[in-house]
Image (cartoon, rainbow, N blue to C red; front, top):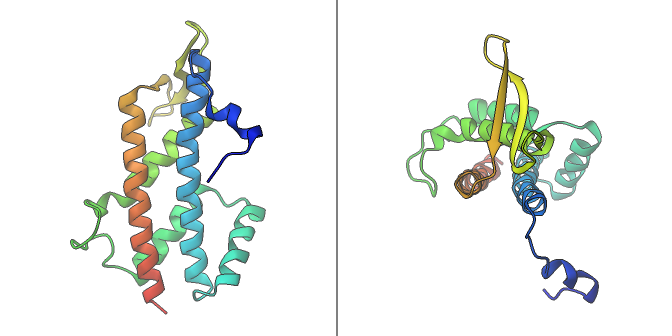
Length: 179
């Protein structure tokens, strides 16, 4: 696919300032989450529409209109798996390992995505590659939190997203077999 002249300035962008690097990686990682969420919508749409393509597309639009968030889509997938595809999490002959971590990985992705999307850079040190915010621990006590946009974090997040995407494709195939 060739980029138009209008788009070539973006292909040549140089990420030299920390704020540009931060914005680029935050956007890239959030886009990976958006891709996963669309795949979840397709699976749910296929399940609910008996695999009718037009109805699946309608359901994806309904998700947009109803503002059903990532966590609710995960809950719907849990229902589908626990009721109709009970063997999915324990199957060993799969493209991905550790299918039993499927839901915990989706939770990790959702939490990190929210941090990437809603946290501010460290305003005390002007460090754009360190996100900081105040949150709660499991005892409802205020705690300071941070997320560093290191290569290790970016690689880990991308790998978990990639594995989750493959698991979602495997799940989609199982949903299609239900018909």
